[in-house]
Image (cartoon, rainbow, N blue to C red; front, top):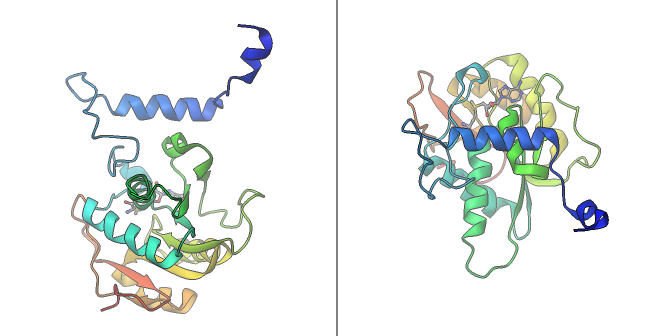
Length: 221
Ligand SMILES: C[S@@+](CC[C@H](N)C(=O)[O-])C[C@H]1O[C@@H](n2cnc3c(N)ncnc32)[C@H](O)[C@@H]1O
């Protein structure tokens, strides 16, 4: 192989390589065996929850319901932003890979603090709610048809900052998942209504958890 051939080989950044190594290390189970192939890169819950980062993954059923909602609301070839909601991003990728007509459906981007998800390459964007408007230049304002967010903390400070990010990203539609105690603030900050649909997690949460939307949705009734 000549030097110029070597130059043509795509290189992973150090951060992506580290995320890949960690991702595959976590797929090795306690017996030292790699988990079976059904645990593909987009399996919901493939990475262990880290409670220091307030991580509580949705059940597979809830991730599916929310991803289907995102696809329906974003429309054909719509762009979806998942803000601190990696399970929905993963489910979107699974559903898209199962499309039978082979056409391009929606595209999705994950805004996340946990760098283990950098394994998703350019679709991962590092995001810290403490810097809500600190987004890469190529992310244009109002460039997403649908934004779903699940803030890490049940506090006014956290929700207010996440609301700033969501509003800058979305053209109009937003879906928020957070505690029932945030209802009044979600209405005030983002004009969101509480849904009847009850999201479930892989581990039961102590707090009552709800979804909120700012558009007509079957999740409301
Ligand atoms: C309550 S969990 C929501 C996860 C969602 N239920 C799911 O299954 O995809 C909160 C999310 O916020 C992320 N997070 C933690 N610290 C954060 C920070 N400083 N800024 C933004 N996101 C953060 C966590 O990694 C986690 O994905």
